[in-house]
Image (cartoon, rainbow, N blue to C red):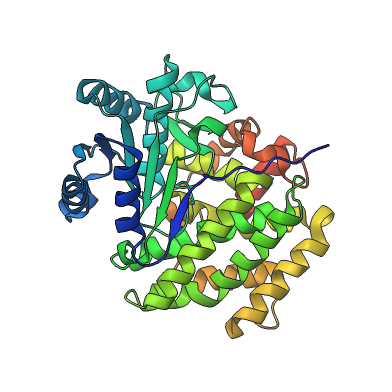
Length: 378
């Protein structure tokens, strides 16, 4: 049986990547870009700088900055309406996972019609999305290069997982110069998100030698460089290495998929509007403790990689090492601290068991076991 491997055909990483991307857009003949971002990035001037760079090569642009953290169906609908009025021939997402996911939803519905809810699940679309250039400003989600998009259905209070080859960006851009301004808390949360991607891909039932290689290198880089990136925001080496780490983790999970950390974190995000990376970081050790019955060897290997690349993690088993790394970068320790309510666990568990990300978890839990994992993290 053949093994497919999905990622954008063109990817730019490292210093100067954004300038090279603008040049490639001009060479491709794009005339008007629909920029999808959030208000903080727009107010900080990131979007204005991008529009100026595009204008310098003859590309007009319009900005949609109403993306919220954990983007919603309403965000996608508002952006789609503005896109249709603008008449753009490409979409540019600028930011982290939220702008990328929202832009994917907009671009997909723009060419396929219907509504974004129609595409929940795996490969539900018929046609490629409008060309998407994904310009990354965080080092964690890897949404700039994956076939995953996560949109919150505010009516059902659930995060829809849309896994579709047609939401793969036309071009991904990781310029570490855009990441220097990330606050410490966001650096920590997105970095732990990347670690979760790598670990879940490594223990996934769909793992293969290519995804394993990507996951192993990502784990090593994160263990070594994430604490530095959090403590020293302007450290150029740490920023660049974290950009590579999150991209490698994206390559891994884009093809091996994920597990119950994400299946459960999606529900916390959809129900309480919590930061995705923080939810992943809190759940990761508890889900992997549950997975040890089927994935002990692989998890021991993860623990060895963490210890070999960070002296603070030496001598710890994998579960303790993950918890120690999260503590080193300032992640909250319990779901209780985030305002999660124990009474909601049965509903959260029901929704988690419907999430497509859980299909490749090494152990398929029952509802009581999912509730038990939530309780362990509480």
